[in-house]
Image (cartoon, rainbow over all chains, first blue to last red; front, side, top):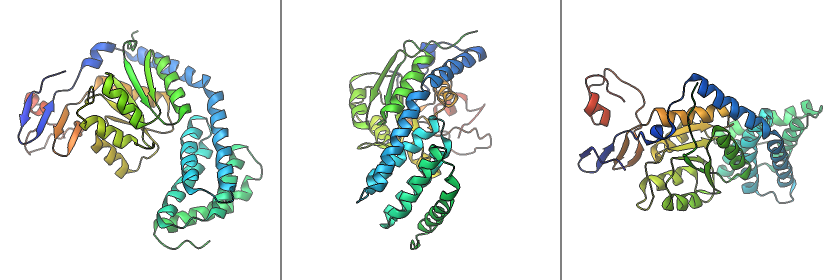
Length: 162
Length: 173
């Protein structure tokens, strides 16, 4: 461990930048960086199947949670959070964006204490339709617009009337 | 042509999503990291860090029961951490300014916004290697120096390591 190089009362201590890691890994030139990223991209491509399966599984979990007789807001929050992270890496950015919108809505609505689960179900169906390439997706647009309005109102701390 | 030799690097991945852990392990392996340990939550990650030295930690932000910010704060402040200065890269879907500032103030070294990309991950690792920062410990903050910008017109008190060694040339803010 490096020694303290300066000490300033009452409690400030500053250590110099730690270069141990640099010494360990050596140097890399532009070709080395390019090759490393290329190797990583190949590895990423090799993960496509399990990532897609994971995102599909999360989507199913989200639908199940939304359709439950007594929807659990915490469960919906957790799954939509996971889905927005997974969908992006699984090559489904649209699903990720919709899951993100849902998560933001749930977070804000939960704070206020008023969650419209009918709207959440519609939104989850829209997310699923997008993931499945459902040609009926345009039909889900009104629900998405309604959700957007709800989010805006919730953010403004106004009452949610849908 | 030369690339980094990551074979001796010890990395800890802390993420409650097993798929993300698997992806990170695969990507880090493709870069040549052979020693990657995993923890499914911040609490477990913290316990592992108490016993073992690592060169790099990659943590998720949103986890239960200990989230990435609290995990980082504990690593930086606990007396029983093996190395409180270990570089921490935080993966996060929360890129709102206030959340980023909170994470920075907890002592995070680098941020990586989701969705995860190979290029983004590699760049953060390179930043940790090539641009190590002074480590500050004072009342209210423990972590890498939060000043990244150079301010040539700065006229305030010189308080940082590079201020003391290279003050005539540059003052970083």
